Length: 514
Image 1 (tube, one colour):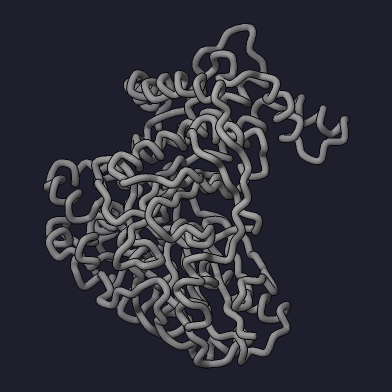
Image 2 (cartoon, rainbow, N blue to C red):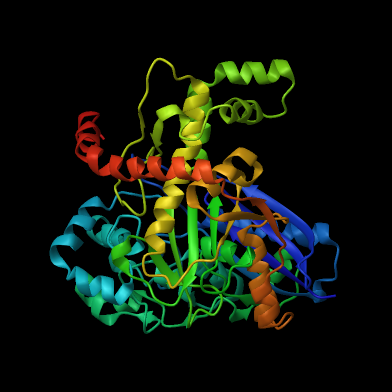
């Protein structure tokens, strides 16, 4: 039996899986760390933190797995969206921490782009919009605020590209990571856009020339690195890609019309398409499977599970105490039982889950959370139900934006992540979106998708086998007509609430000195 290692570099931890060629997990290991937030709206990480975590995790799965090193054929790394990328000098040494996806400091750069760049051309070429989420605006922040770093920068490398360089000594960027930078990548031509790079004032030489598919072999493991990891020199290093797309592949989503929602701390809904329209407010990149033909188009809410944990910690001490006293293993179980007694629509309470601003489709860093419709009758159970419904409305908002020019979406919506553990939430998602909701029997995550790409890239599995994935779909919930009718009405209010409150949200944002 042959084996591969899939690694996923996340925002707060890195995980590695040792997997055999049928997809069975032989060993796994995770290593945690923190995001640096030196100022409000800033979020950055030094790449050494990621590389240390990657080496620890690979070493551990090799040791735990107990399989001969000669049988481990490849490593593939998936990573968080690296925003600006890692600025490295001629010697490939990092010059500054990476401004990661959640960093929102590039507000002045966004204004500059809106005023000075032909936005129709930018949308047409890149299939993406303008926001401080995108890497190209963060690159402009580096240029404007750290000119010495900018002058010394040879490349701006996505996290997985930089780790791959340390593993095998080769510089290459996969198409998903390149496209997700926005602003500088020509989506139709699948290459860097000389026109947009020139317009933005980002030197083309900072973008590595070699662009590769996510399943392509970038190089071979260097002898000194192989020794540290317990692997053989020459073990293949496969390109990998952006974690959301890699996790989507792990969920068996590889053809047009399939769609999956990952609901953890944040929410990410994505589907496979051949074309994308930037005006709909979603993010587009080449998919990690069939990347010359297919796009991964996604939208996301910044706070999904984070809204749930915020509500629990801020308001539910009595529930926490009751759960302990009554012997519940998890307070959410008690909170769900109480919320399940409240009818669909939470007796007129609506929650807007914009607790850290919002990404798609509204793209407003100054949006804020809100409860609407409160009266003396309402209690914690109403508010908790409204929180779950609000995050589900955000999911529907993104699905509606993503289906505007899609030929069609499958009638199956696959949901993975923490929400899949909640029967109430899964039913709610079916009722609000109108889709049959399925989940995955296996513990799906980006590390498994990276292992799948490693197996594909080294010929251990066929393209057909990779397209099927290594997972089993399980039906979870079907829309209930009466609840769906209620939610259709309430969603109309949800959709109208943000535009109605936007000006007030911005004024409050200003008043509290953000």
